[in-house]
Length: 378
View 1: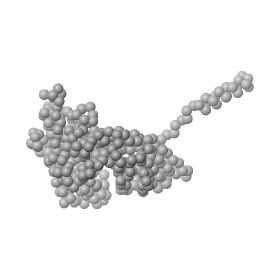
View 2: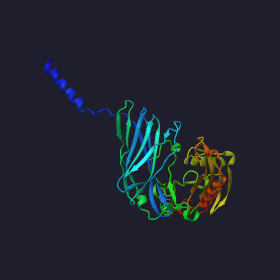
View 3: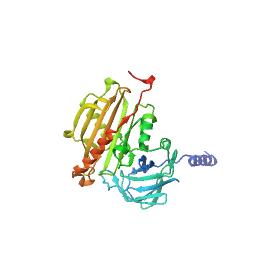
View 4: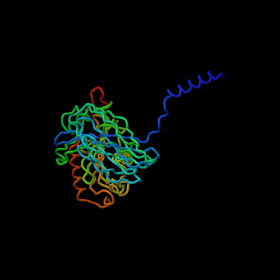
């Protein structure tokens, strides 16, 4: 081979190397942004409770870490939540937080591999938007070599149409999209704020993402199937309710106690890493409201993580609507204790108050699901 030909081949090889796509680096972080819809039944205002979970998947330990979240125009931070200090066992850490204008900062001295940081805020929207884009979070850190690095995660755009399209509060929202509701103002007039909550990550095997609101119902393919989880109040004064419903023929409805407990346990896990206190379960069956053969369950839930939430009272209703061939599952939980090691200490007076609130809410529950004439099942 002549020198000229060899030089030409080398030049061509170098040119190909220059245009070849660079090998992408492995990602250092996984980000799971979720935004829970929150309604104030007093003012009929709507906000978003954000929870940005940032997971370190780098295989490295970083130091002097800063998280920067810039919010779009028309969005402001109402409140900065302070999360309890996590442990290496749970993989969560607390962080120092501050807000400057429309920018939120959180900082962390040490960020180990396989640890995650939860960054929750309540966001106030200047007006109800049909769509919103959140800029990606920026993560700045010192790498193991002591060099400052910065990574910007992708932007996220979400559809808020169903929240912008409702005039009024949570009761009207649930009626419009699920054909059911509770009379919050009548049952618990002092509980103005209610927030939609996601199915717990431990139950679905992944962190929730996107806008958290109601699922199914009039937002899905079938008005006869859907679910939502709502909660009100901080730990120690908290009520949460899971409502799920689906099409069930009469011969398929729950008629076995063991199957009932298993189904309710599955919905209990939507709320966290909880189990039933088996010796406290009381199960009856009879007429409730207009529904015959309603399962009524009372008992206690227990946190499987020691020194976190402790335990609390639970009530559930499972019933079948013969006109619409829909089976409904309602699970209501209350938490009236302190957090941490003090969660082992009972607070019967507070729990009694919360159980009373649950009973009042259940008394006002109403389903308005009506079968269309051509879909009516016999």
